[in-house]
Length: 330
Image (cartoon, rainbow, N blue to C red):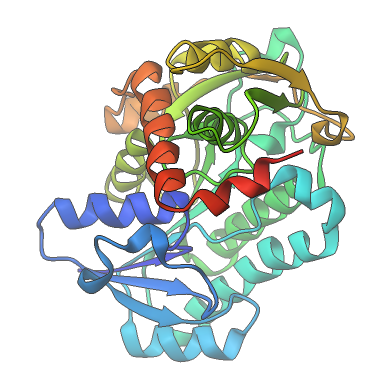
C-alpha cells in the first residue's frame, strides 16, 4: 500500500511515519515536504521513506506527484499550526491551510485517483465554549478565536465539500491538545520543557517564562494520536468528522507544575505579556465517544511519561546543540 504523509518532517508527521514503519506491513511511505524543511525529526528513518519535494501552494507540482505515485492513503498534516504566529501572519496562515488543502484535494480530483484522505482539522475551530457544552461534541458550533482557527474551519469545510461534491474520500479529525517529544518549541509544554532543560544545563537562568496558565486542556500523547489516525483511515467513514483527544484534563499551570516536579533544579515561573494571545480559548475538553465507538481506540500513555519524555528530548537536544537554547532567552 502506498501512503503519503504531508508535513512528514513535522512533529506528528515524523511520529506517524515511525509508527507505520514499525507495523512492518510493507507499506511504501512517501513524505511530501518543501525543499527547505528541516529533516532532523526523520534522522532515524530517513532512508526508509521516499521524500517528495512539493509545496501545497503549487497545484501543478501536486498533480504531477499524485499522477506518478497514485497513493492509496493520504495523511494531510502539513499546516501553519502556530496559533500565536497566526495573529502576526493571518494571510499566510489562511493561504497555507485553506488554499493549500484545496490544492491538494483538487490535485486528487484531477489526477483521478481514489485515496482515503485524512484531513487534520483542529479543536480550535470550536473556540470558547460554555461549561454546558463540555465535553465538546462534533456538533458544537464553530466560534474560531484566531486566524489559525479560522483557517482550520476553512480546511475542515473544504474537505467536507469535496466529499459532498465529488465523493473524494475525506475523513476529518478535530484533534485536541496533543504533545510529546519533538513538539515545536512554540507550543506550551515543549516550550516549558526546553526552558527547564536549558536551566538544568546552566545555559539560562532558572526562570520559566509563561503565558496564560489558567486555560483548561485535555492532554493526549502524540504516540497515541498517530495510532488513532491509522485506525481512522482503516475503520471510519468518509465524509465524517471525529473528535480525538486524551483523557487527562488539567490547567496549563497544573501541567507545568507536574513537569517541574521532574526537574533536577528549582525554577521560578514568570508570566511574559508577549506570550499572551489577543484572544484565547480557555476550555477544551473533548467528547471522543463517536471515534472510540467506531474504532475501539483509547489513549494509553500517561501524562507523566509524556512530560518526562519531553524533558529528556530537550535535555538531549540542548546537550548536543546548546545554541538552540538561545531562542528561549529573554
